[in-house]
Length: 135
Image (cartoon, rainbow, N blue to C red; front, side, top):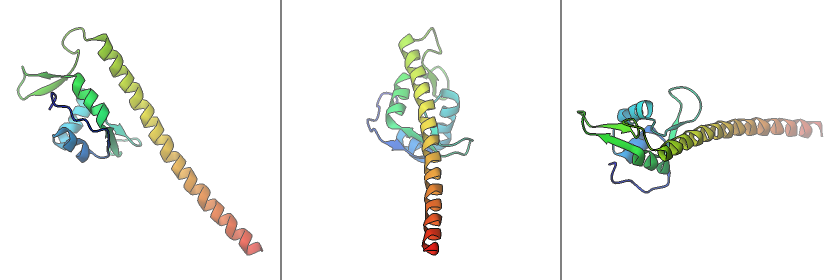
């Protein structure tokens, strides 16, 4: 899995799609998100919020993770956990974290704008009906 990265650039819109893409179970993917920083984005707040991930971020994450074969069963360990780590990788990880936060903020803002557009549309319809009744 780690050696053969998939090259799709699409967005994966659920735990199931992310798990299928990485060829693992849903619970394994959720555990990787919690323990190893798998780049999964949440829309909204809370544990049960909808999730999405991009294939390019998953591919990058896979390329920077180290397989620890000394433990049974096979585990993935964040690069740099054994030793000093590569400063370039650390910078890339920080950039990914910043990008994750920005995309989370953008998703929240997009959802907020959709709600506001729906409210504005409803208010315009009410106003039009008042104008039509007054005419």
